[in-house]
Image 1 (cartoon, rainbow, N blue to C red):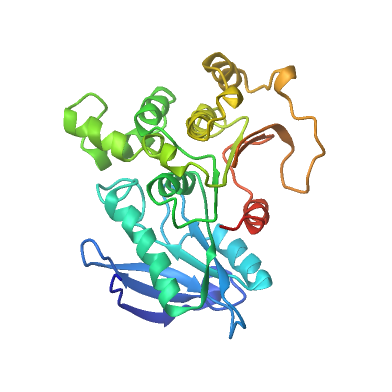
Image 2: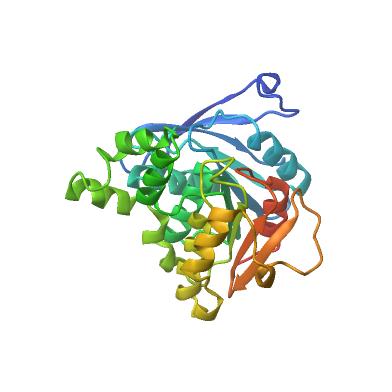
Length: 315
């Protein structure tokens, strides 16, 4: 059992636009022994073990990021779930961040800390994130599939080297963040290329075989947003392979066309009933326990929809 020590303070919720207190905690990293901050919540005096929701911040954010944490807190309060919002080394432009082993272990440590402090139902530990949080959600699914009952990743990066090229070509400065984190551009050295592979979910996702994973992307992302939908399609294909669902894979021609045109071909369009969610479903496909949804939108998430799907998953 890892030893996790902490200190805590109650944050003024008015400064975060929240209606109830979150606990600011500091968890000692089991890897480099540095204190790592997070915000945590648990309902009062639960009568039985409770589910835990882990919410991850975006690419340029940290644990103090507003937005998703407010929505997550509201949902967890109503559902009587616990919540942890770890820092995992903050914005993704340092070697310690961007899917590094340190960042991965910080999330594992945050889960362990919640299990030590509260009565957590280990069969219902959930993970979700948007953008950089979507990247890290997929990274954690592949690195530690044994922890999660379900993972919902939104508009995430699955191949960091490819995203470096995509953002550089689009004139977005995220490629500079990648270079700062890994020590250079793809092809600079063997060490850089190994770092890019280490930090890319595509390297690890096959290990998430049998894990329920919910992949989501907006059809206009990569055009009005920063992460082309090919990143999500390629993650789905790896998982389809891992779950022996190869007929469900998308061809590279299909992926290239949809990514470029921002349109779903007629034969791939979703024809089922539209569920209650923020965006219209344009495409949906299942490959064993893995689901991909392409929605009418861009680089954005829908946390209530993610949590509703997660609530139906159990180990």
